[in-house]
Figure (cartoon, helix red, strand yellow):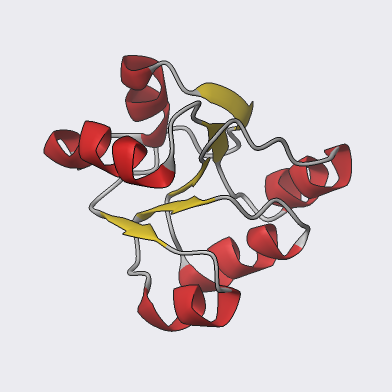
Length: 108
């Protein structure tokens, strides 16, 4: 499933979608950035509550398809501009991280 279609199917709010056709395969939940860099797999959806500028860099380095900000976390405009520049998709889910993962599991 693509990042754009996953977001649309589950009603996630699109915050940055510079690469809408990126395929999503699996997911990783984590807030400790060094763990995400070492453990998230290429093409994963990364679910987090982190919203600082470092999420764009970590997502790009980890080559994840999509960052899903759980619990309606909202990043600032600088984060979104950096994500767009680094070709990182970011969406927002109103659900906690676990519930977000459960919801998308059958699609990724």
